[in-house]
Length: 484
Ligand code: NAD
Ligand code: 6OD
Image 1: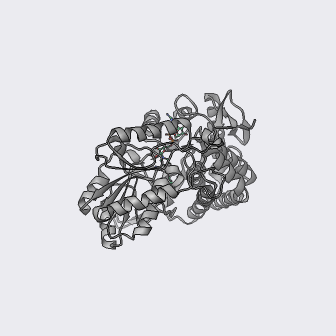
Image 2: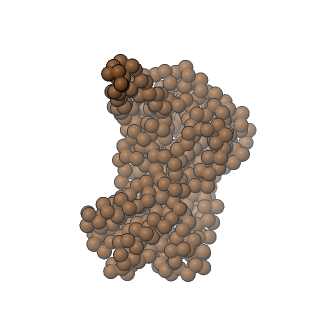
Image 3: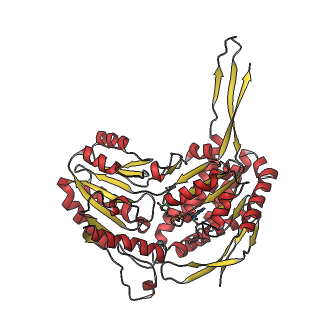
């Protein structure tokens, strides 16, 4: 049986206990993963501290950037291995991992390698009463050791989204990938070695959250900052833990995202876009639209067309190039999603399509599949309209006036993303600017430029990453004021 090990100070290290890594497509065992105990987490943090002080933190920007490009090259050279490992761990379709997850991992390193060389620093010439004036300028300094904790839905993409800027800024890292998806973070350790990254710069501890590697990492006094992507409730727990040592945090959390479709939209483009926004990655993207508001004149036609599209999505083995919908990540997550399917009925939903579990008559019946599902007819106060489900499901509600749509879209404790579908650009701008979220797309969804701010408001997170915003989180600015 394959083992997945911790990676500390350039060495693969076994821990005292193991847990299984399960393939969600058929429920089979992929590997045994070794869990890091408190002592191993401490070793990882110490290794990161030493590498920061003696090597990585002292390297010049150019050398770090060159090294990051080598990491991207090495990811590309092992493209098929990364795709295979990500598909096995997550059950996501191979076509999706090949076009989204693995290319984005390489792009994350390239973007921050280039940005760290070109990012400007602030400077001000300051008037003084005596006329001699002063010059203020800021320099970037790394934070030290950064703890990175990531979820299972886009494992390599979201891990490298944080590792790349952290390393670019001169920090060293200890990463805690999701217990559900340990493989690609571990493959990345091999890539780090091949790319000449010094020992101790990239460390991995495997395990769970509470009373396990995740919590031990956030409690560690030598960790200078914590960056986390995952559920809002976990963000609350981490915030409590890091409060004791006042660590800076960056949180990318959950969402209950709205899409607003106006009657003047490009109908085919809107249906296609919403189909992606609801069902991509089996609905397990924090940016997915679980609430769709459609203007009344096109409501019935929209619901019918989206239903047909949802029913035509090919569900099957993630290894089949034509598969569009894979399983959910795990049995407990499927139970959670199915509990919302049941709740939707109890809350009075009309089931437009789906609502159950598909049958394949083969090994995939051991996997964690659910049907793509569309509901209508729920009250806006229903739990299924308010709570994040994180599956291939949406509720579609009609609206008449623009203000009504804006008000329903904003009626949530979350605030991650929204999408607006209209051919009236004035309306597009006007509505987009009223969205209480961190990211609004107009006539598109999940179209990314890695230089732009990414993050959420309310329960969806704290802070922004992306471009210079990442550099600002992963470094401290030291302002220097010189009397002239
Ligand atoms: P999760 O919060 O359960 O777990 C995420 C990570 O946190 C895992 O590595 C887990 O082991 C760790 N963890 C759990 N409890 C911890 C604790 N007390 N201390 C330290 N670490 C702890 O999230 P998940 O189920 O893996 O991912 C799905 C969630 O992530 C959804 O809510 C989704 O919306 C959110 N998400 C948000 C974004 C974003 O960019 N905003 C991106 C992806 C996923
Ligand atoms: O594209 C990104 O940079 C990003 N952080 C995406 C998050 C997706 C959530 O599941």
